[in-house]
Image (tube, rainbow, N blue to C red; front, side, top):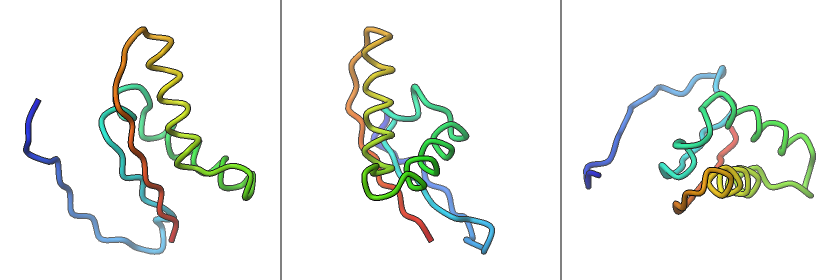
Length: 79
């Protein structure tokens, strides 16, 4: 456990369609590729499915299945 954040600088180009900012509660149980796919699918489903909420629900279900507990915070920003 560290109080030092993990920070990366990335130049955003036309190739990037979104950014997912999330706590380790998401990344401990869902890979980056899976998170991107789930966020894209939720966004394609329309207003009835919020991508960030979908990722939080998926992570909490994965933690529950593993018998673990963690906080999960997710923000998805589309460009």
